Image (cartoon, rainbow, N blue to C red; front, side, top):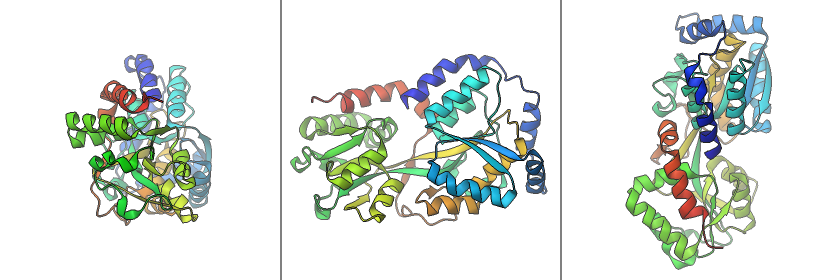
Length: 348
């Protein structure tokens, strides 16, 4: 997240310059089109264009399911480049500064997408499929859409932690039984900010300072790594892993289970269409595919949590608080500093 904000700040020059692409106006008009023949028009145009260029943060394994389904359905080739959200943001900004417009669709975390929207690199879209999604997945500006949720859950090793001993509130983590047993991911400032804010900022900050002082929290880089360390027993209880990763590991037979305490925090990942997309019809068609029933079903089959209201959720009885990407960008310096001072700078 820190890398995203640094890149966002460095790219400020773009805020004063409109991308010089002749088809930007046409892309905007097409993205706003709401006629009854919208889908037919997109399919016809996409087949003429023949391909769609995608920058994505999804894994190669996940895209190996999604992209062939799109190609089979529409006869349009997907050209993909995969990297982390920070690298996607960096590449898109660098290309725009050089008046190079190769990408059609960008799939990444919503804070990265919000940065791109603020730099006027994404086209606001009106899609009839927005009506099927949870309200928080569709920002008022329509510059991007949330396609899936990463829910922060707590994972524990079932050989080392008894279910009846699990903490029911964050206050319970002060119990001496958790000394040397807690783990956290190194870049989860957004989770930290939302949990602390929900608890009451002064009270929440004091609580986490006391947890660190009394029991310590092992900091690890990477949610997948942290999940695997829980499965191996090196970290008996992890505060921040993603629900889909924990579930994938559990289904493979590892001694791992997961649950979530309130406040339950989720971050959306989604996609936006480039304002200067070289293949505008294919870009919008891919956008619609990802939030369609078919695309959302594929995401669900990969243990992701779709944003469509049509799909059952393991969190249907849990009140989820979604990270607000705009607010996160605006307050990043504050929460990055607090997370670093309280969680990352622990005595060794």
